[in-house]
Image (tube, rainbow, N blue to C red; front, side):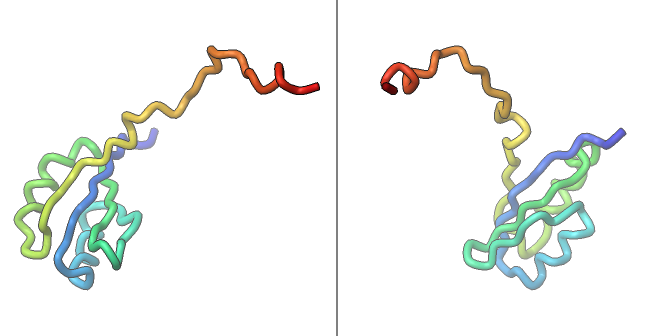
Length: 87
């Protein structure tokens, strides 16, 4: 079974030193223009890892990603009105 993963957005000062974030989890994306890194790590170790992340000199701010909480299953409760207008 796969472990539960959680995502974090880490705002950094220097992208070159941000490559060292790979030891904390899986780096999914690094933005060169806005200077942030999207990092996924195991949820059971996340609290301990966050304390270590925030102490790094090149880390400005750490935000939790809410992607797991966004509903991705949609239901069609309302009837499609575009079919009523076709001839």
